[in-house]
Length: 152
Image 1 (cartoon, rainbow, N blue to C red):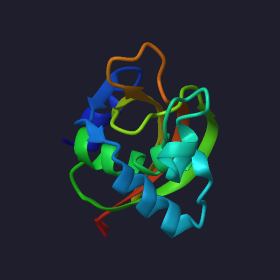
Image 2 (cartoon, helix red, strand yellow; image 1 turned 180 degrees about the vertical axis):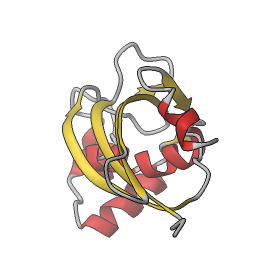
Image 3 (cartoon, helix red, strand yellow; image 1 turned 180 degrees about the horizontal axis):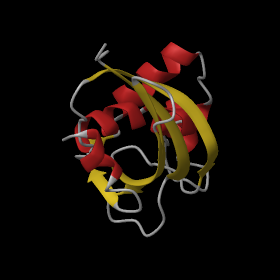
């Protein structure tokens, strides 16, 4: 889609990703990558004795899936050569993601800033839903920057 078409979507939901399964293998790989081996994530027997009733995903694992969810569910803008994560204005973990759950991202375009040549900055409200749960895993106001092909 063109940048103008994308900007016209401001204030609207612009995409929903596919479901991502949260397996114990995924959690363990994240624990290895981040060196965060807290038992509520990696020890099913000990985690079963907690109020969670079993292992849960790291909050940062759920957050890290936003990139894949964006690739999967948010429209591409013609001429974009690269996008970068610029940060968050707000982000909250609202519900634990239990092993065996599936999560997906839901994206609403809040703002687009085109004041710099060959790039635009977006603010997107995102919610990561947990399948068959009332409350989302997380909500965030995410800032992204996309770079466009030079036209000069």
